[in-house]
Amino acid sequence: MKTQQEVQDYYGKQLQNSNDLKTNACCDPALMPEYLKPILAKIHPEVDSRYYGCGLVIPPLLEGLKILDLGSGAGRDVYLLSALVGETGQVVGIDMTQEQLAIANEYKDFHAEQFQLSKTNVQFIQGYLETLDELGLEESSFDIIVSNCVLNLSTDKLAVLQSAYKLLKPGGEFYFSDVYADRRIPQALQDDPVLYGECLSGALYWNDFLNLSKQAGFLDPRLSSDRPLTIENSKLENKVSPIKFYSATYRLFKINELESDCEDYGQAVKYLGGIPEHDTYFDLDGHHRFEQGKVEAVCGNTLRMLKNTRFKPYFEFYGNWQQHFGLFEGCGKEIPFQQDLNEQDCC
Image (tube, rainbow, N blue to C red; front, side):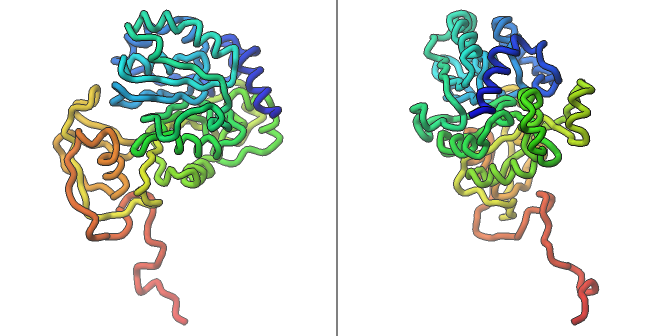
């Protein structure tokens, strides 16, 4: 496929390191958390220099887990994650670009020594994200799937989301960062190889992404963080104007019982603490911060995201599913019908 070949050429031959990028869309300016800085310092400079991510795809509670990185590139995130899953965990990286994978594999011994882990802790596979089912990966075998500024480069984004859903264990999550647009991108811009390679013209309109996620089985996508993108290239900026772009990190849970909307069952949770690096509070997403020791009302979906996942031991849960109170207040939807009798039109 022409676009795949162009992306392979862009990331395999045209870009030698992040300094070769023509915009800042594929670079992450976010501050690295203090606890990750010692790990990042052990990443080989050549691997780090070929990092093209737009977010931080390091969720908490990773020890012993099996993780898949979609579009792993030269392996920076894979090696960061390998240190956090430890000897009993494993990280598998998938990428289509031979040159990137060559760098990743070249430094397997280096990072195994740096983190005092066996080489079997990390594996890299060459393949296309649109056809993950051809790579021999076992369904329902990964605890977490991550991806960093790669979904926008895919030629079949629904296929990637559907494959991620199949590969996750029940209760697993797809935790990833990507670029989104405030509207659908015109075809003429999508056909521009530079704009596509710079993670701009392949970006999904944010509402199309939400609908695709639900179509793939992820019924309640949760936005963890977001920020506006500045392109910092006047020529390319003029090309895409007036479209606005954003970097956003989502977490999508594979929980069959999730509902399409946040429904109120009169339930509540209390964060007990204990999640490393989250002593006093835990952020499930950008709208749900749980302070240690505080009982907080939650919708049914939020309760399931905490109770049916690896977060369960760190919470107490209150209530059941016996009584339904309608939509959970403040979750983005309201009853569409007029509530005031005085507003009704006379027939």
